[in-house]
Amino acid sequence: MILRTHPLQLLQVACCFVFLIVFHWAESDLAAAEPKAVKPQYEHGAIRVPAATANEAKRESVSVALAEQYLEQGSAAWNGKHKCISCHTNGTYMTIRPALTKTLGMPNELQRKFFLDQLIALTAENPKKLQRGTGPAQVIYLAAGLAEWDKHVTGSLSPETDQALRLMFSLQRPNGSWGSEDCWPPYESDAYHLATVAAMATATAPGWLDQSEKVTDSQLLSQIRKLKNYLRSEPPHDYGRTLLLWANARMPELLNSTEQQRLIEMLIAHQRKDGGWSLRSMADPEAWGSGNRAEKLRSEPNFSSPTSDGHMTGLAIVTLREAGVPSNDPSIEQGIAWLRDNQRESGRWWTRSLNTDRTHYITYSGTALPALALQLCGASESDSVQSELSADPR
Image 1 (tube, rainbow, N blue to C red):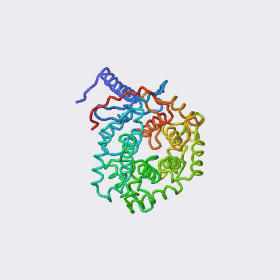
Image 2: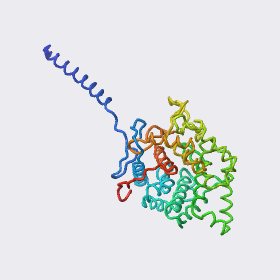
Image 3: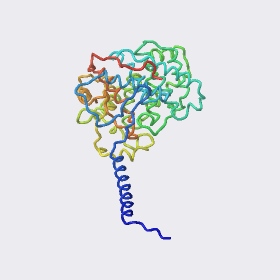
Image 4: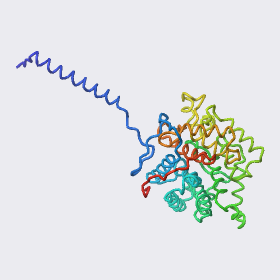
């Protein structure tokens, strides 16, 4: 038996088929046209910090209060979500925020409590395991953060800081350095960087060096000498030389006066025409860590003339000021002018990551360092307000 289909029915079926195809195409085009949801830079509990982007609008005037809010929220969110010490976020908070007490008031006690909890956990860790991966970096930033807190908040050495410093030196290598990752510049990219932070922790903790010398702890004193000798070796790039200049401000015997002046001139020579400094100009792409970011960096459109950023501009001004360059020096005045002109609406100063174009965590230190630079030059706001944060970051 042969079934016959009316031509009108065939036409109806064809129309339905065509409609389904067109509808599917239209739906696909619409989905493609809709912008993908951008993941927040920091997020935990009630805290949600929007993604850091280069196209965020700039403020008409500087707000250190907004910068403070960003720093508080970012670190609290990192503590709560990741529960570890990172160089780029809560490590930066604890090494920079205590020094801002003069401008912003007391830092959040919960941040120090988190570090004390980490001290307990890291002390209990297997020493061999602690030598691997980010273990040394976490311990060094732990000691450095607690040392800065003691110096700027309490004014005296705490037992916990002493414990953290001794834990730090227990992980030191025979050549005076510490183990380091080499894939996440500028922080987790080379041993020299970590050694400068260790030196600053050692010299910043109130009275710790004097105490070590008085009790004639021969092993510890030998380790400190090894650290100094290691830092006197040639840094891997001009970024490392900048960190050496900063560390020398705390531990003056690292450089003689001629060497210090040479590094000051080197840093000033890196200043851009707009008054800022660029992180990308401080090393060849292959010199950052293992060079694993070289292809990415060389492919950037502005590779030959990188733009100024918050991280390097803040670091340059802080380093120059601590090295004794006066705030009315033309280079510093131009740098401060750049900071005034380039803060974003969120309170951040933009810095593009050397690694990926996702979270740009370098924008965190790219905000903390400018805030400290402004304070060191007497250019901070006087009407800072406390951030409204949740009571417990965890």
